[in-house]
Image 1 (cartoon, rainbow, N blue to C red):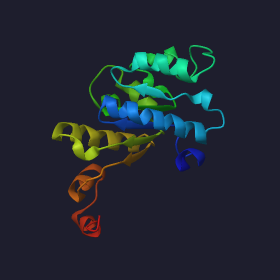
Image 2: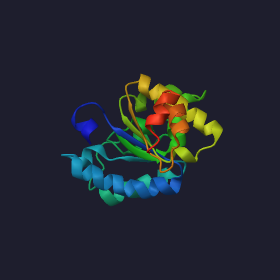
Image 3: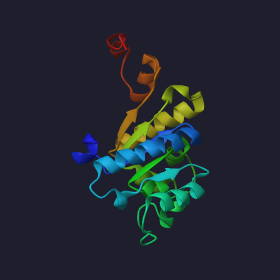
Length: 178
């Protein structure tokens, strides 16, 4: 909220490890959006994971009175798997963001969609070495694009933190209390 209100972020992407966690956080995120935005219907958040298309259709029926133009946030233009991250606010699985740093078609669209946003990466301690390497690349890329990256973890070790965000072994001594 502070990043949005101060103009340091243009939107939020909340990246979670699974479809189930994304679905559960989405409802809480929607309540948050309704509290902080003057016109929350103007910025209906997207749900982005492999099974989200049907769910988004149901969510629009449940929460929106009028559908408006197809280009309105949350409507069908954003439904393409390539364009979902272009919506100002979204919740989804981390793989949606990781595709921005992989050699895949239209990765630049995902880069553009994440640029300048507050990107929240949850449960970063739980990924394997391969995914952890992609997360490190994503953090570096997002930082270069002017995004703010918020890393959430219940059990992030000092060495894993240093690996993700940099720093020296001397910094680790300061973080021992954590």
